[in-house]
Image 1 (tube, rainbow, N blue to C red):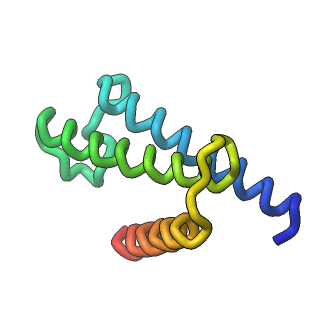
Image 2 (image 1 turned 90 degrees about the horizontal axis):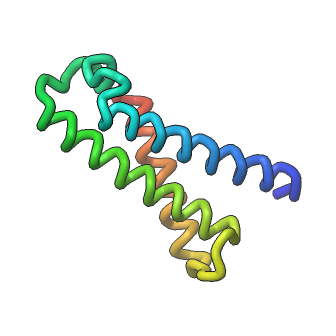
Image 3 (image 1 turned 180 degrees about the vertical axis):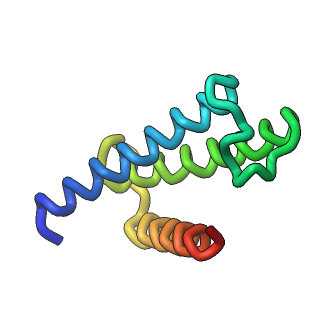
Length: 100
């Protein structure tokens, strides 16, 4: 992969996951009404807390993997594990797209 392309991809993924985390935190705090998300399937405050907590955990994990793979921390994931997790992310997003 080209150095510039790789750098753009890393910055893009870090930005997307960071903004997604902020979005879910805004929903959790009530600044964005939960009736506007999850396709209207969330019908109660307790249901919203569960859905948003799962979203925050998953997105935070994906962000952490991208940050580790990008070398933002001294701790390094083994290459095979990092690539495997990235492929799992691809599958999750493909399934999400098909589901939508």
